[in-house]
Length: 210
Image (cartoon, rainbow, N blue to C red; front, side, top):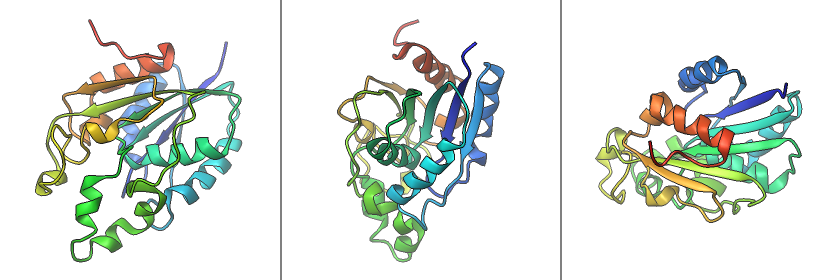
């Protein structure tokens, strides 16, 4: 039997605990799960990609899948651009701003916001991120329930998940894209999102019907 490991990568200001429910669901489905923890503001996504490389090198598994929330997807893009992974399976990004983040662009002009965003802007939320390596299957799930901190930021294009616009999640080279009626945080806890994520890891596409 092939041993498949799902590596979960959290987003901005988080530490991976927010992905516990998703971890439990994957384990119940028979996957081995590893949560990659990184400092999202002290280091840039590019620097955190090197931390991810160290983390991945220590994992013994026949196949590695990645599921990333928000900023975590940008860390993965840097990682994929620098490292060839022979045992890489498929990857899913949840609400990742693959285009320059309108929310971050607004926030960085607010008092004290630059210290909150830290180095996440550098080679990250500012949009200077490597293109996706099309040798690897990538699926993106976006949300269109406008709920959360982002509702205070009027400049996020609609539809959006309260933090990231649907149009910002799109990326050249991805295999499939789907929009679900969930918020940015809801992408982590929705059973529907999990079902679609697991389906993509198995089939390389989302269930658009049924």
